[in-house]
Image (cartoon, rainbow, N blue to C red; front, top):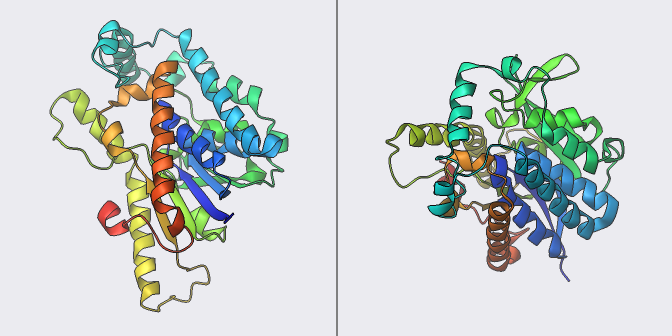
Length: 339
């Protein structure tokens, strides 16, 4: 059996990370795929650490089981929340929207007026309890199964901070997923951090600079393209959200494309790290561009399972069509997708 190595770059996007859960589960089931490194932001960071710790504790099946347990606990937390889809939201289809939920509308308006330093003075974050229950971070820091990178945004400097295996902690994960309208900035070693999506969603450079594998699979959950011009206030806010959380990735992939073109011309620019890369992508644009930003806060179990199923299907199709190209050539046209 031919074994092929992949590094995975996992984008963040709230509950839409359940799509990535499905992709990861399908990749873990395929023993021809060796996951060498994981780089993630926000929900992507959580999926990444769950996979890394699960593999450390119980191999591929350990990672699959821990992913299931993590997303199940996320859903259980929401059962006790007032933030639920309204009857109309459920009636209009499977988009997972919360747009017609009066609690969501009130919550959305409230966060425009008050900061988490006012309405959440104790800085309660339910994700902290879930992660601490599932992961022993002391053990994770010594993980040898896979290389791990988690991105957060330094509030003061505006730069991406990438935490490695040795720096991994519950605070690093919470920092990577710290939406500034919901939670106080996470302070680590005297620096304050917000969601990593603002400066790297996900960053690709750690997989290029710190690892040797040439094949990088980007799993996106924020659509780049949309079909219609936004006209309502909600549609405009949704589009601004997807644009902001794709900007850093777009810029970074343009730089990657430039370096690859120079290498094709025989120019290395004296950079010893410059090498041929094979870039791959799973991006469910057709599915996710139909879902509003509010659905990223919907952790209803049926909705999460639906996203997971789409992720498994997308990964299975990608493997069937592109497995032979791993280690040989890119299956993502960088110019078409990112330029």
